[in-house]
Length: 377
Ligand SMILES: *Cc1c(COP(=O)(O)O)cnc(C)c1O
Image (cartoon, rainbow, N blue to C red; front, side, top):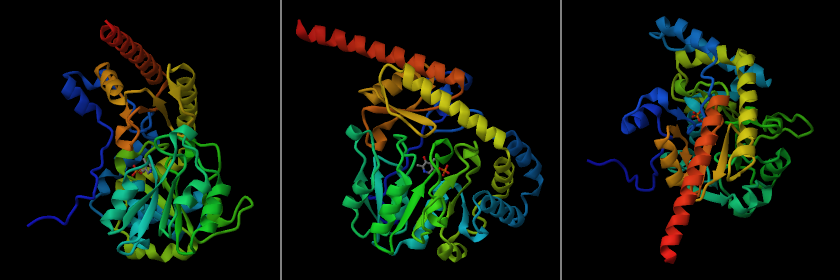
């Protein structure tokens, strides 16, 4: 027998791991740095490491109390009710829950392109379809209500990624409000704030809760994760914050005990470790600024913990950098064949990434010059 027809389902391509690349190059993992997956360069919060160790001996039980405690802590953090917080196996798990809650077969979701691949994959798993709006490179990936509304055609869910992966651009809350107001009452606007901690503006939670001068709405949800600023990508922990009216659906759609005991304990420790998040954000802002100032190619302004760089031939640059021990993300798979994305690292990592990239760019340019000379003679 065969699985169902998965030909429409694009396989997810994660950034490459250090061990994998080291093995391939025949080098030690410690000689390489990885700035390909927007992970936290400082690692997890030290408090979370301790919590995971301490929780190890209790993993024979289902995570009932820890799940409830973390839900309450997240609700407290945002000043919403516990029922509005949907913990999940990573932000990706929360994407699934929102799709399970909203999509009937053949409903569509509207997503940005270039953009995060998992929205579309998840919609398809749930028998939904995918439509796209384009963020234009020539317009610096600017995000406006007009762009989304022009592409909108009664889609059940509209995905906004702000800050946007892989460009780092954001959408103003007033624009998001306009999208929610001008789409059908049955259209949910989800604002993916996976990189929210690194951005300047406030969370779209204001639109759900009616804060900061906005009216409260029942058609906006927000997605957050512990993978980026909190450094917990490996435990898989994220959540959605939904309007009160949606709250009861969680119990009907969630995979039982969606977040593991270790994830919940780590999350509880990390959410209280403000120092670690502050340090992470500070390093990120410095690294972002430094890369914009020193890379010998166009670097887009970014509100995330990464920058997008226009390098011409991304695959050649990514390969050459990898040979020199720096793993970055070739954005061809995002539909941006000329661009690479570099995660903000520690000071040392950022220095090495910039030095390596500039050297590679200079070498490739030399090659080009030689090629054209040969061609001319
Ligand atoms: C990283 C990321 C997520 C969530 O990742 P998880 O590790 O599953 O929490 C969601 N959206 C975007 C755009 C991301 O880059």
